[in-house]
Image (tube, rainbow, N blue to C red):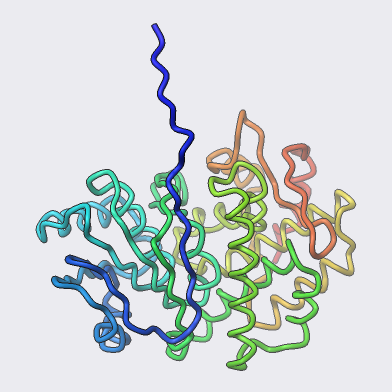
Length: 349
């Protein structure tokens, strides 16, 4: 017996990404701001007068990647039930990537899905994590292995929030900007080499260009069935590094910077990237104080952890490798020994 359900008329999930000072945002009847204590202390006073809702609640979650887990998610869901949040309500993700991921996932599963908006406060979340609808939490097996694709209703990127961002956090966001340029836009990469992002006008332009590039990719491939996987350049290696270090030693963007260098070494071995281009990328990362090396204690163990990555399919590890600067190759045709050779190069840093 077979029952067919026709679902060809998909819901329109389009939304705007506003890069400017936040003006009034209409949230409807009930809304919940999800944030952490640090962001609440720094910026809640700036945000609250700009939000419009009949009932507005605030939920704070602990700060840091190691709190992006089931315990924090359950705490958030319990508070939503306490406040009698319904399907017409809106969640506001107000923080960095951790807050955005958890708030979005809570929105995706609470009463089978409610609206949320993103107000990212770190550079990394402004140029990457807040755009595209990836949500989730970590578990002991790895990063973002439990989650959902759930698009926000809108994203509001206000450069004002970067004024209090520590230098290290800022650099972590720059890593994602450089990633976008290496994978998609040689001209943008050349611009980054000659324009420092600690200039206000330059950082606004870099945010705009990065968001445009990512939005174009997401529009083509919302659920990462094809070209969107290119955004994982550096991440396959980075997620292992983060897992091995318990998410405590490196910020996400720092791990991505190292992962990009590792991916570049593999690309050079495959004849996709020249040594000179690999050096250009590494020097640009290092110019912002980003780490470019991680001491691999056990290459075999590091390699085995790739199989826990959600991008691995049919026991084949998928790598995103730069094809020159401004292009990429997504491939699962990489020999184990080729990867191990690269990892062994990092046994002494």
